Length: 285
Image (cartoon, rainbow, N blue to C red):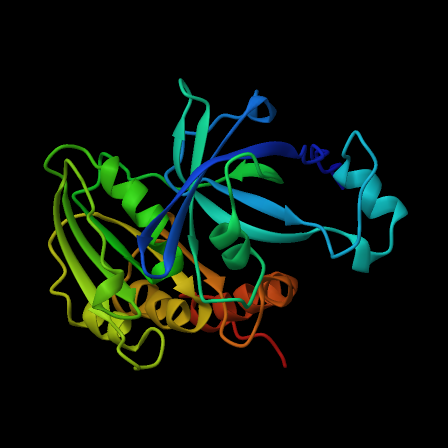
């Protein structure tokens, strides 16, 4: 068996809060900077993401901070908890990294942190990862997601080729969560307030009802895992979109925090592929 290539250990960087801004009632923009961002780079993908590190209450780590050493020497309940956020913008000249954080009140980790963040506060993170950017050769683009995918959708819109056709569907909690989006493309942007409806219901309906244009599509579909599964079936099975023309993943799952979802995500994805991938034989249960 060929030896698998070694993966580089993730190196944690230290960001310092420069400023924050309430974009909508439930969306807080946080701009990080400082000398700890030296060496950070992003820009190849529009879905670049970082993982913020939140130490458990009362736990401090030795310096220099080493995530691999922490995982090797400390019990799991003392490891930092990770929360994943899209790089909304990276200004290399200013050395400023922008992320958008959904705020649902006092629950959770990142939301309360963003709501209470003040200039000078510091937070460690690892990244960036990423895999998607709009294909300039595509005949048209489909961008669909909920609030969790909005920063990546907004970043993708800004990188569309001039005049590139795009159909964009964004599901939000209520009309107050709409925000101004900019693009050089020719984008039809549809906001879909839930107003109490189940997550994903309006989004699945809207994409299902779309009269698909002719030509090659490049699709980006992300958000809650349940509706992502439904839209994956629609695109791969019903519409026959080739896998390589589709960036699709569940960013989160109802009833799970990020720790629980990440622990089960690979198995979930494998099961979805067995169920939906054209030509894939059924696996014994």
